[in-house]
Image (cartoon, rainbow, N blue to C red):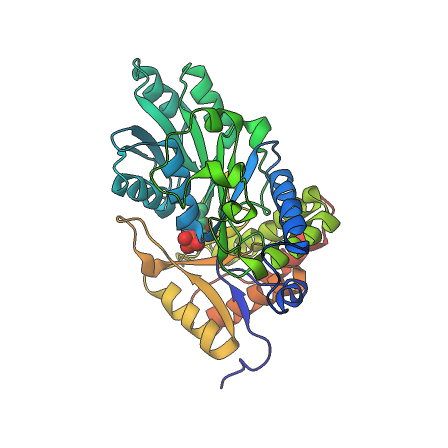
Length: 400
Ligand SMILES: *Cc1c(COP(=O)(O)O)cnc(C)c1O
């Protein structure tokens, strides 16, 4: 029997749930793009995006998705033939590396596997060996959405500094911005790369870079008029801000989303994501706890160390094939869409699924998703320990 009539719940790591307030703000006829309120509104959006990234640097908005933001950051900091060091902790670091390679950058990959963080000591060692300073930029991902690892950005910055290396530090915060603590200036990121369809709660369509002073100073001549930061940061005419027609409705939506984040307060937003993430971990750990008597339960969190787990997405390991059956049951029988496993080459994607918990989310949504997953585990006869939902509810009830 299908029970999936009612409001569907999407729990994939982007696009995330779009709040009704954002949808209402976008539900309007097209505004004037040559004058009037849109121009002042986009100024406030720029200002508040910088505040969201905790920086005095300059945001640059593109019509595009996360891949667009990747390309923009590379095209303004690296020329063909320049060298970049990419720290990979899952599929997304590798994807950014491939993007840079296709733009002619000489990419060196430091791969830390699928279940570990980028190691600051290995980074420091590699940079110290680069005596001629031929590496022009270090690219990393804060939260790799495939493995759901959360890299220690301040520690990586310290590693660059410890090696006395002048490389620019580019950080992909596409999954994490607006969900997990990120302090661009205090942590020493030179470029922040992000998009609007995850923590910012919009439909896909806006990508952005935030450019710090060092990256601005060390930028390279950008071969593309579209990706070039300079006219967008210092436009003579408004249309140069977007190299053409602005993303009109997305700007209204983004204005509303930034208002919602301001009303909650960024520290509270981070704390809410922390609490909801911990509730999810508690459920999974309870389902996967060994039951003794030789009965193995395969369910486990992909990242063992709590401090290094993302607060925006959780990757869960199952016995081979169970993840696929479970996702299908949740979607078809119950109306809950879970994230597919995106595996590193040496991993089996069929034994991974992901819960996206970014953006517009509260306990009834998270507990509802977890209870539905538990129902799916039972319906499919997938071995799991009792009490997962109670454990999650306990976390929601705690004062941290
Ligand atoms: C989602 C995501 C991307 C890719 O974004 P698209 O909008 O799919 O192009 C890149 N990096 C990270 C960390 C992501 O979470």
